[in-house]
Image 1 (cartoon, one colour):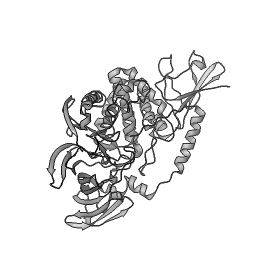
Image 2 (tube, rainbow, N blue to C red):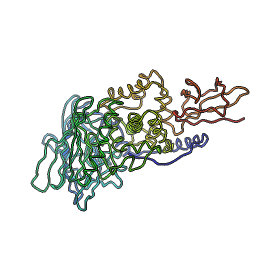
Image 3 (cartoon, rainbow, N blue to C red):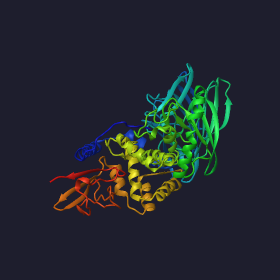
Image 4 (cartoon, rainbow, N blue to C red):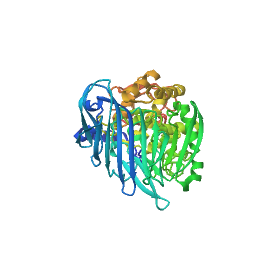
Length: 550
């Protein structure tokens, strides 16, 4: 999660120039073998197997900042093969790889490990291996914006531990098939920590074992598919309280784990959880993980969408650490981390992009979810004010969609620009019930699956009855926003789009006029009685406009 707080004044010619520069830089970008090993979801060493189950079993020693343990891989062969790839950062030691009582050797290349079996694994065959590892994991310098462990203290000398690894990848602290295209179907997460603290991970607590050596093991079972970066450690001497939400699929358990000194504040602040669930079940459909429950866990970093165990570090304040990112006042009516990070349960955790180049699917929809939450409780105008207010944070520095296959995210504009793109799309569809059905349909059709831009845009096109591909392409694949140009030609006013996408033809509405106008990239005559200087596109469209003077 990252938020960019900059103000850019958009002027047509400057935006066009910035776009050209950004595209030139993008063309010159070079990527390494390590980037491809980490980012590819098409490598035969990854596509050859489908991961079914993990048992991650790790002991954490906060005093030494040292971890040791194992991960069991159960998989189904998607093709016949002898060699597969898994991933583990090379600062961590591979102590042993066990396969049917045999010890195998993996070949390491950067942070990838190639494991060759003593026999061919036949297509459709189910098999397993276990990786034992140890070492001092990467310590995050500024979680959650960089990845790794957080080892800190609270209330003087009490240990407080967390992990966050979105973007950099879960292999920064545990061995796994580290790409988003193949989510594990279920997992058991066993975390051993010193006796005076407890671990809270994803899913439901199914076991607690005193290891008789100063450590206690906590077993957490996840029964839903989960992406690797969501699997998390959160450890402290937590206070626990719980509740029930009566939702669309029955009773949803709500569990809260907070530092003891913050218990009373949490009981007040966390009432936003039920409001969040009410709003998002209305817009997106049922909470996706009833079987795993919902948890909110206090962390020493700001927050992260760890599936069924949302990381919370917003200091029990409304807004984003007490600030309203929209500048409208509406963002101070609710807790940003509860709303935003929980919104990812639908977009990011339920629906997951195959490649992080398509992370807009996670972030743009979740950014717009903030507006939808505001609309649900405070009215449509409030929701619109909120999303339009966030435009001041857009920088238009690079395309939102990054190069595929190299573990690269696009511009941080996937948040605010992406949310405004979706509001623009909603305005073009011009049917709020249809828009709501599209949001629900995305979760029904792509839920607990991985997907990509083509599939998501194709679905919205089909359900809206409109071809919106060029609009998505302009906002996602190019830096500049489209410019609607007007010019006086004798007694007539003409208009057209200036955009990067050939044949760009987004309809818009003008203030004071009914219905849409339909500009293209060719000059057209506008049927209007208004003077050219009075023409203004309604604020719902995130565009620039320009009057060309003779």
